[in-house]
Amino acid sequence: MKKYLLIALIICGNLVAFSQSSSEQIAQEKATLPKPYHPEEDGLARIEELILQAKKDNKKILIQIGGNWCVWCLRFNHLVTTDPELKAILEKKYLYYHLNYSPENKNEKAFAKYGNPGEKYGYPAFLVLDKKGYLLATRKTENMEATNGYDKDKVKKFLQGRLK
Image 1: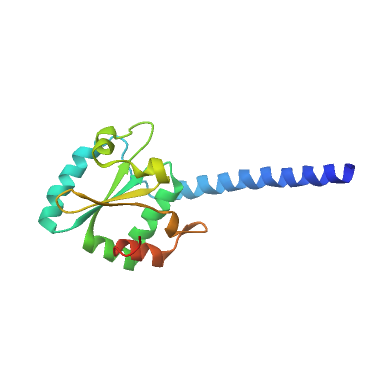
Image 2 (image 1 turned 180 degrees about the vertical axis):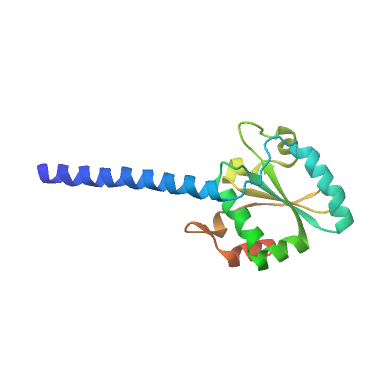
C-alpha cells in the first residue's frame, strides 16, 4: 500500500511541477509577443471608422475578439502578421481589427450590436463584416489550432474564406 501511495505522490508532484512550468512558459511567451488590443478604445466607434475605410478600399473587416491577456489571441496575431503569405492575404482582403474584451473594457456596445462569439467558443473568436458593416460570419479558432499555436494551412483557408 505504501508503494502505491509513494507512486501517487510522485505523480501529483510531477503534475504540479509541470503545471507551474507550463504557466511560467506561457507568461514568458506572452511577454515576448506584441500586444495588439487597446483596452481604452471604444470598439464600436472604431468599427464604424473601419466600415468607412472598408467601403473606400473594397475590403471586408476581420475582427479578432480577445485581449492581451489571451496567449492564443497573441499567437494568432503574431502568425498572421509575421508570416509573409498569411500577411499578404490578410492585407489584400481585410481590414484587421482587435476588439478588446477584458475586465477593463468589455466593449458592451460593440457586442450588443454584433454579438460576442468568444463567450460561446472561447477566445480568440472572429467576426467577419462586409464593407457595409453587415455580419457575414462568426468563427472560432479551435479547428485552426495546433499544439502550441496555429496550423498555417488552416489559417490560410480561413483567411481565404474556405474554412467553415
